[in-house]
Length: 404
Image 1 (cartoon, rainbow, N blue to C red):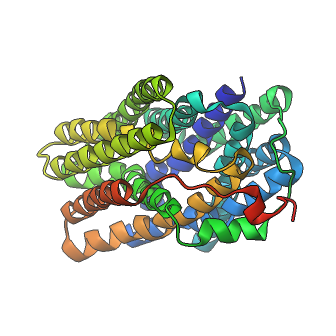
Image 2: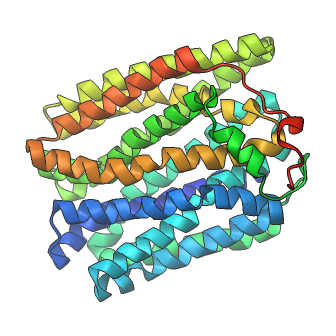
């Protein structure tokens, strides 16, 4: 139940995050925004998102995952509901709203990892982590499918009301079903642990892969609807096809995670675990990069979406590598802090990558360079994890009491 509720939280998180990438097309027509202004709006979310990662992990240790996660979801849901109001006030008001929304959403995954560290055994770590990816993909799919329908019938404002109130319903359910399980080490912020997580170590292979994954996925999530409309003149009634790559990513990721967990269960040694994680990461990112190159050369919107499905389907294997490695890289009580640091570093990809895509498009007058950049970053991630990643432990004696 805990894993399911957390996956549902990830689902809602991405619904509320993605809807603006659809709504911004109609909003731009109403408010007269150009492509660079759209990039600023889409990127503003990530300024808040990177600020709250470690804060979320700290608060989860201090007060427990249940209450912190509930407050975070309630916060971003209310801000989603308020988005149409602030958008009509001024451009800067919308930017501030998006930053605050990002700040609230930024707490979600570090808190979820804190919850998982107390509930999820090693042999189920891949499936549990990938269940979050399934949730994010499913949320992206639902947002892409329902948003155009809602906008066409009721206007762009209604899409924010619909998904925002959905998050508040989850808060009620989590209050009933959510539960904390104590993990070793107590609570509070540990400066020594934070220093250990940031000093040069093999953990940077995880950080880089997380950054690489996010930059390409975020650019695709935020810009794919605009790309298909601008580059291929895709009819607004067919924008549902934007959802297909994320459907494939979700189902593929879950299938890959089951296979990887079965391989690990047969030989649970550290050497085998490290080898399996490297293989999953290397094959996933390399195959995904090749798919991105093919996608960038597609001649129709349908071919483009089909090739992006191939790319995301293969790349989702990597989640059973670098992403699942977080749960077992350190002691259970340190999982939330590791995810907080990793998410903080990786989500600068949104701050940089989403606006950068619009600048590259303007500079080259082509989307091709944007997608080739995404492919190159994934290819680099495959190389980095293969050669840098290895078992790395931070013992409690090295950082002292976690409440320090």
